[in-house]
Amino acid sequence: MDYLCFRTLCCKGQPPPRPEYDLVCIGLTGSGKTSLLSRLCSEATDNIGPTTGFSIKAVPFQNAILNVKELGGADSIKKYWSRYYQGSQGVVFVLDSTSTDEDLEMARTELHSALQHPQLCTLPFLILANHQDKPAARTTQEVGRTHTQVHTSTWTNVHTREHTHRYTLTQTCYMLRTGGNNQ
Image (cartoon, rainbow, N blue to C red; front, side, top):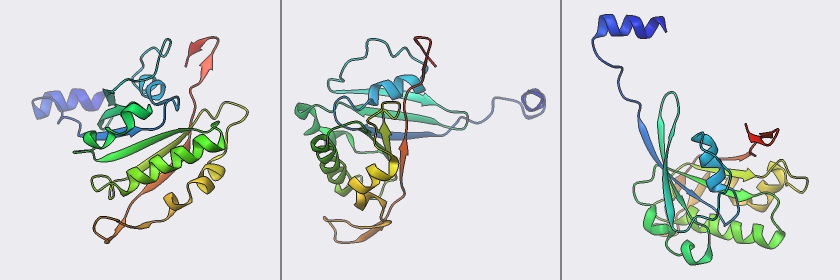
């Protein structure tokens, strides 16, 4: 607080604007993309349904603002994902860690397709293994074994045959509910 008072008195004007970063958020239907983004934006998470098409949310943090394009995960929408990749500076891939082996394999296929896309092939990826609060949830290590290639640091871009380096993080997450209210 003292810093802001000092800055206002001495430096004349508002502090510089926070940098903004454009991200794309993808994953299969039911993985929890909308719920996670709504929670990050302090919005109500009651009555959330599948995203039809896409939505854009500005997620404010103290030092930056993330402009997140969330793309619906239905089969009829996935074929249009690549149209929304342009200009992205990072990718968030959300998967349901309680999914069946078949659904996890489908998620793996979509993830690897995105990883090889020319507009995303050099961007940082964050993989969120959601629904960790459920008993059947897979651990980060189990998800990592399913998505083994994600953890390598060097990739060969199938379009240019060049080697690229990327930063990838797999993280578990869930929404905390206390007393029936979102916390």
